[in-house]
Each structure stands twice: as C-alpha cells, then as structure tokens.
Length: 176
Image 1 (cartoon, rainbow, N blue to C red):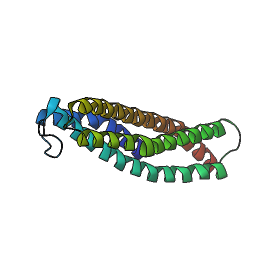
Image 2: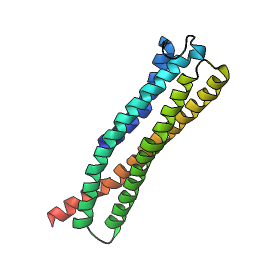
Image 3: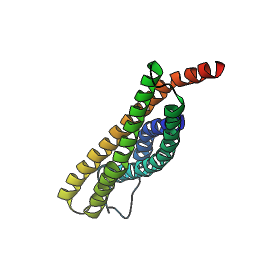
Image 4: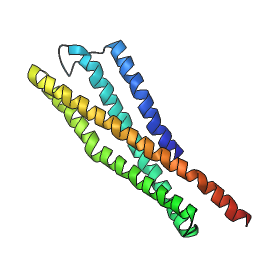
C-alpha cells in the first residue's frame, strides 16, 4: 500500500520536472508539426510521457489493490466485529473502494480522453483553428488527470493513516 501511495506521490512530484526539462530542451517532433508553435512540442512530449508513466503506475496500483483487498478480507474474517477497530476497518474499506474507483476512472475515462485529445491535436496540427481548440482540449484533459492522481494520493494517504491502528490491534491480540 505504501509503495502504491509512493508511486502516486512520485508521479505528482516528477511531472513538474518533466515539463521543466522539456521547456528547457525545446524539442521538435518531426511527426507533429513543421513549426514548433509556442513550445507545443515540448508540452505534447511532456504530457505523452506523463500518460505513459501514469499507465504504468495504474497497472502497479491494480496489483497493489489486489494485495490490499486480500488483507482487508483477512481483517474481516479474523478481526473484531464491533468497536472502534471495526469502524477503522469500515473506513479502510471505504478508502480502498474510493482508491479503486479513482484508478478505474483514470484508466478507462481520463487516460483515453487525454490520448484522444493528443491524437486529435497531432492529426489536425496543420489547421490553426483546430490546433487552438485541440490544445485547450489537451490541457483540460491533462489537468483532469492530475486532479484524479491527486485524489488517488489523498485516498491512499488516508488508507495508510487508518491502517496505523491495525498494527496496534494485531499486537494486542497476539499478546493475549
């Protein structure tokens, strides 16, 4: 769970560096435009790189979610069914469902929307009117992807915080 949280936070932190490097390097992508308008090539390359990294992180997140779900199932089977520890378990399950929901939304809604916006931008790069419209579409989709990633990091952070009490509960059960 901590690795999953760390990967989400890392991606949120690294995206600014990716944009800064691309802005400094000012790459030209020969398959996109003959002219690099407003540094759009660097922005497109940055967003494309972010999208690929987010896809890897989401795949890793689904694997981590499987492990966490097994742990939560074990807590339901072997844990207390009443009291504050049970309430913590319910909160953890809610946060886990929220995390999975955010990842599913990202994988099947946000990422395809971003990929479609980038493809439209590249396909219609020679049309100045379409370029302006598609640039806005790419930027909106990118901002949504960052917001979704931030929501995932918050849900996972909460999941970690509410799991802190679990180790105390396990220690109490093993001593008795």
